[in-house]
Image (tube, rainbow, N blue to C red; front, top):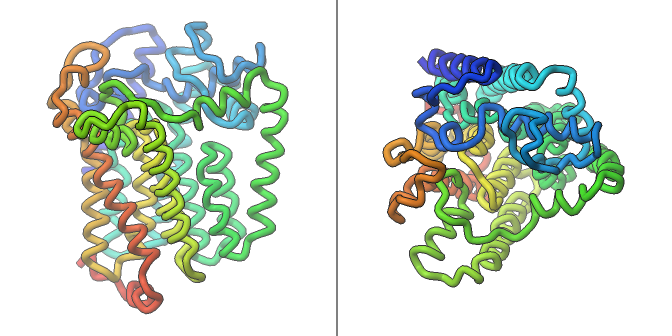
Length: 415
């Protein structure tokens, strides 16, 4: 059933892309009317076309972070990644026409999905639980949205998942390759560098990060406004966001609670968010490094979940990165049924659509007419399970060594 649903979603996206290629304007397909990303944002392929657009601008004037109605590609969002991605993947995309390149990218994402499913079988040592986990991969709706938008969060999370599975099987050297590839796509997995040092790969991991950094220096130095644009889009302080049905991050949820519900002054919000984000990341890093021998997979999952909670701009499709992190935590807790079931229930909740479709309205921004309870319920459907997973990550890293050994007992969850 999950495979049939997944195939239907992919087929719908491909057909939608073909309609757009022909210039046809048709209603949003029923399966994608359940989500804000696909019914109130530019698409399909709008996030992928940011990369394609950057590749074109690289050849024309070097302004890879520019955004505007220049008709280079179909509707797109601004490029906000490292210059090296535009220099490599952006140029490679230019080998094809816009819509063909997008479909090629979908094929690559689906190939990575299959690889993650194979790695899941190996990581969980086969058994009755694996088909259920495969079904979760296939029916995880944020992944469908990831395909629709042509985004890069799943690629990042899937590569980190592959790195952690390889490392857990003793292939630390090979594990560094998918990890550094994930950093090249979206820079935030670089936070895992101390974990590789603990794993004994100090020289290799540091050298890879150093080479990636050097590879981006020319772009930041010579491309017009590249460094300033990159910082402004990714590291500028958050501001109070008006009602928005597209924000699904803890930062937006927290803002609704503090500024709207508890009337915290709006001018205090940027400081609150910055201090809170630093605290969450510091706690996650402290737990990940608190003792030698802590499982790298649990540390990596907790750190990336900390990033998911602290980043200012989180859309629904970004949660495609959360599933692989949750599965890493699940494997570490199979010996504790309560924690394992909590993780599993959280992942199922994340796989389901939010209540968005119940309150969707015509126009650009339906959230303007929602009550505060409705504005909280929609992102809360993603934020609260992610918070639970983050707590499970801290629990896993904070256990005593004796508890860790006990958790390695044969799993009874599937039974």
